[in-house]
Image 1 (cartoon, rainbow, N blue to C red):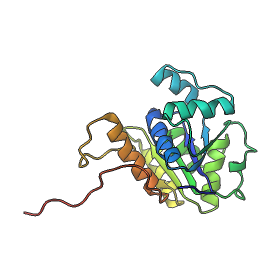
Image 2 (image 1 turned 60 degrees about the horizontal axis):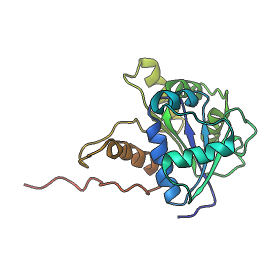
Image 3 (image 1 turned 30 degrees about the horizontal axis):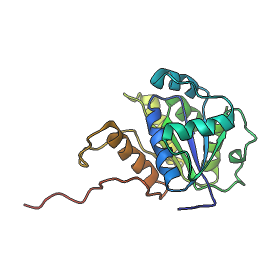
Amino acid sequence: MSTIRPLILGVTGASGLIYAVRALKFLLQADYAIDLVASRAVYQVWQAEQNVRMPPDPLQQEQFWRQQADVLTGGKLICHPAGDVGATIASGSFKTLGMIVIPCSMSTVAKLAAGLSSDLLERAADVQLKEGRKLVLVPRETPFSLIHLRNLTTLAEAGARIVPAIPAWYHQPQTIEDLVDFVVARALDQVDIDCVPLKRWQGGERE
């Protein structure tokens, strides 16, 4: 499915980069245009979780993310440096389908709830809120403190959709990817994108 307006994919330093990789995989396979911005902490998380180094150059990052998602062609991917607050996605005049922050750290949640924009990812998310566009946050943290819950509530009241990285079991997952894909599918549901092969709930058997 080709589209003119891109979807912004924000990736923060929360654990669980596999969520971002799988989301990107399905979106590129479905021929979506993606503007990706990773926070500075993501470099450390890639090293910690996969023992690989994410290149700092945006053009090299595009190839890097495609390799991680195992989708070398198809769709459109543009990677933005976290410090480039003058990028297209920093402006409300740049039309998008919305933004998904996956995984989303509690630090990012706190800054967004307070209206702070210290980098491009946070600015792009703030733009979606102020423009009334779709902003989906996939927090990957446990347990939530009262501060976390209050910040998430503030963002929900401002229009963001909160999709915690909590998988279901009724689709009978057999692999880690099955569990991850459930969360990815539910996050994409919030922006009306259905490109993940997911066994959805069909109702229980009647006695």
